[in-house]
Length: 338
Image 1 (cartoon, rainbow, N blue to C red):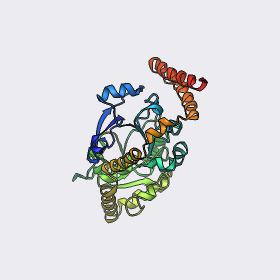
Image 2 (image 1 turned 90 degrees about the vertical axis):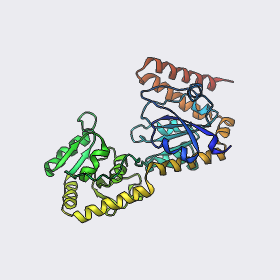
Image 3 (image 1 turned 45 degrees about the horizontal axis):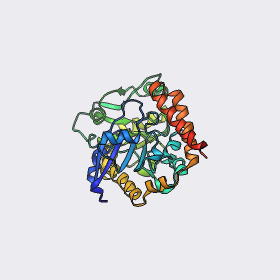
Image 4 (image 1 turned 120 degrees about the horizontal axis):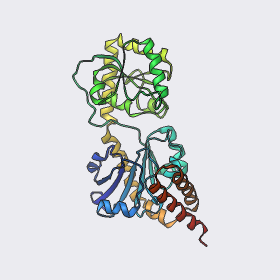
């Protein structure tokens, strides 16, 4: 089949969905605005046809696809929040393919699938984030939610840093409008993840000050050339790095220029779409869906049954819990079938 004829049921966040058409795929989105469960038949009804692939792009919700291990088409999971949800690798094992945002978690997913079926797919910046010729009226700026209940470590760090850097500004709002206004954009990774703010700040042509992160940051960017780094959770080091940047216009502007050039060359959403499209094409070529259906995995079904039982108890929605419980019972019957 020509890729021009292939339809993807795109479940969850849009991410780089808009660039998949340029890769030869037609996408039909099923947005998830709250926890819900979708069967293959429900996906078909929404699409108006049987899709060639179902791609779930992470919404940090309970598992949304029921019986994905039985779907008759290629399946893929784009995982973003594996640093938050420890059950993700188990669920991903029911799919044919998986793309993982955090490099250091790839191995856990590869154990559930296989290395050839798991792709490291880091965050990227959409075309929404662009340089803007606006006045840089913030010296050091953090943009994001700061709440002692939901982001306690971030809240504490900013309080400590603010005592050392009086010019620190904290704002909420449109990142694309706020980030270009900063001489230095501050990033905080509360869970140590390589987050979207790194790519979005650089895409806005801003000088970025970010913790020295794991998950491939040093493979994608060179500290001192594309961005500046500080020791995570060390307010004294962060303050010293910020002061040095603010005192050196040439260095700050060079970092911003080099960071933007690299994002434009390799880390826009169009680049991520091309990488996922390549993974999907390989899955079609290897006929992974046919292989999966021809050899049902009893151990996988047993693990998934426990996952459904867990969410039936903890999802907090009676109707959704009933669907999870029904799926667990169905898998239980399969286990006891002679």
